[in-house]
Amino acid sequence: MSAENAIGVFDSGLGGLSAVREFLRVLPHEKIIYFGDTGRVPYGTRSCDTIKKYAVQDTNFLLRHNVKMIVAACGTVSSVAGDLLRDSLKVPYTGVVNPTAFTAARVTRNGRVGVIGTSATVSSHSYRLRLNKLNPQIRVFEEACPLFVPLVENGFIDRCDVIAMATVARYLWPLKDEGIDTLILGCTHFPLLKEVISDYMGPGVRLIDSGLETAVYAAKVLGEQKLLSTRDEQPDPAFYISDTPDSFSSVAKLFLGRNMEHAVTQIDIEAY
Ligand code: DGL
Image 1 (cartoon, rainbow, N blue to C red):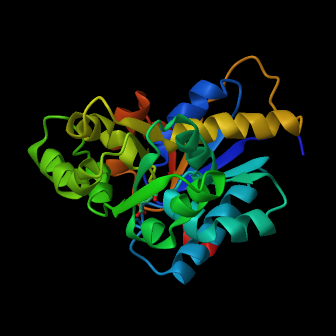
Image 2: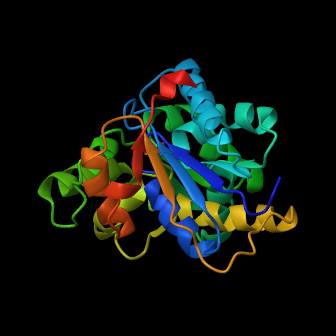
């Protein structure tokens, strides 16, 4: 395995781009190959068996590109299929749950931590189990926020967007009520709603973004395994999706701040 091979990152759709943005910043010499399963998003409302099947197909696709590491930039896949991928892959793997829970356990002051994610993520209690393994004293309050995903996929993320504001308030009031001081954005779609969420929760609540924590963790793993690239400049990332590129290109441009049209390829993920 060469250190110059790419890092493979995948998500059910656009949300993982929030992680890609952090990977490009934290690992400025790495080539990133991203797969967004835009044809089958959302994953978070599907059964565990279906999520596992999709996760295996997504990683099979990335492995065809000889990636040196696989990153599930998806809270749902990390929660439901994380063990399966970790045990079966021959390259280093990370999801978003462990690095994010680790940071939340470290920064909470009052020991009251909120977790928001998709229905599948919250039903798995993956973040709660991990947090309580790190510190059994932490009180964890979980809330599934399934409507956040279509809001993000459709670009309804502005802090003044009334639909985004109302949806955030509708889901988050119980967590606000519990007096949490730390909120895990347990789905990679959610950092794109960070401003709306932060406006609602107020300055006393620290938001933990899974993309950044995961990028920092991936850098550590690659460093330990002597797999960090030594090239001078960052190659352009490559993007693959399973639906037509139209809306992906325009929304992705918002998140990555660059024109993506030329860099996106549609693939048939069912073939993997
Ligand atoms: N971005 C995915 C996650 O982190 C989920 C969205 C979905 O497919 O439901 O959970």
